[in-house]
Figure 1 (cartoon, rainbow, N blue to C red):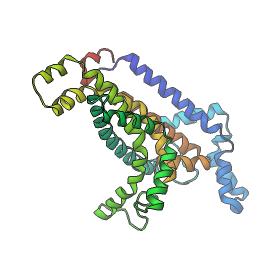
Figure 2 (figure 1 turned 120 degrees about the vertical axis):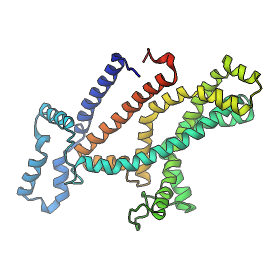
Figure 3 (figure 1 turned 60 degrees about the vertical axis):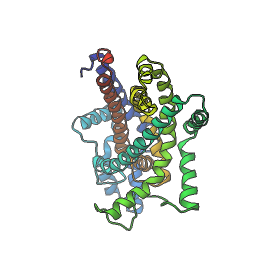
Figure 4 (figure 1 turned 90 degrees about the vertical axis):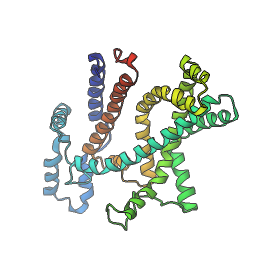
Length: 326
């Protein structure tokens, strides 16, 4: 699959802009990593300790241009620095631990929501104007409109605090030691149910709306009419001919929604105290942990750009008409 140089140039410019903004935004915040680390020491912040901290994180006192040069050098060598809050752990270690939980949470929510949303959208389009469509389609608009924080707080209060059906927070039972056994894995999935259900309404609504619109257009194509004329079953026509060819806009929408999904995961992880990238970003922002903030924002940018790049490739493979355009 060939990607045009113009398209690659767009990705390169987007990445360069993200790197610059990723460097500037944390430094617009009041305070500095050195001040935060000195405050953590409290009475132990002797002059010698302060000087040692400045020697380790003294780059924040340099001119912005030199800070940016050092920052780019670090990116080129995959050296994202050392965390302020979790010192002496490196940023790679901190983000590596958090990324696993966020990837698990977001992937599970996307797979679940994609299956539900596509099926609901296909049935809504097939029965357009019917009772099913008049209920599901407005409900999808409502699910898209409700802020994630409202969904998170509601599910936490109803299902965890009031009914006590699910754990209140964390990624697994703190009394368990991580191990590859049914007890630990069951605890992980039990603690992930509410966060997944919190992320899912927005995704299901988006997938259902996109799938419905795309499916309505596909159902008017000649090959669908021919399939119906052959006497094929409704399920075969609906999913084998209609839904399969209506999936491309859904894939595009998924790539475009990744930013919103990460934003929702931040709120969700904070509410449920889930140890993913969202909670890490929140704690790093409070601690003025510039290296972790920069590393995470860059990781989220790369994930979004990578998803769009992957969708471009999938588009060309699935639809040959788009290969030359990509």
